[in-house]
Length: 260
Image (tube, rainbow, N blue to C red):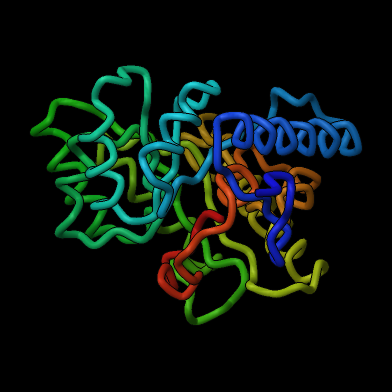
């Protein structure tokens, strides 16, 4: 079998630890190059490998390659994987997909980050559950920058009023914003989504009492993270370029598709 072949999507499959390390090195090289072209330091951008649909064998390969934080869209999938990797004591999980309020209790039990906060009801439930667990949680507020009805997230016009109310929830450490760009091959349209999120963060930094604590811009996926880095991304969510193409179609995750 030719392990260097690529799929029609351009993602190299992963059959071994060497394959995964090769993909990971290639992604890190792309990040370094994008930072160089943007006049940024490579350590200003965090790579969040997205392991949705990825089997435990490849998750363990990723951990062995140095990945200690993984992103998952579906909280129950994340929880199952966390329970199956308790021996990897330094492996942490970021939930990056839409979360139903009745599943906040699961996130409160194990997640290190939650990147898709978009309602006060959910914020209140997370705060209640986290208080019971006697822990805090880093959170990002999801913004719908594409205007697509299929996307979760706040409209930009709603953002300031929403974020002002988050100070009522002491267990939520609000760190910044997250977005999923338009599902299109139009690079300029994608870029506009990233520009809008950066502008929204800059406004929140100036307008909110806790603005000096806001620094995270989670945006960009396997096919567009260079654009995101150019526009200020501090976290890029990369799945298939690291773990290989997914067997399940993207529609399985719509509209929860917040990392690819």
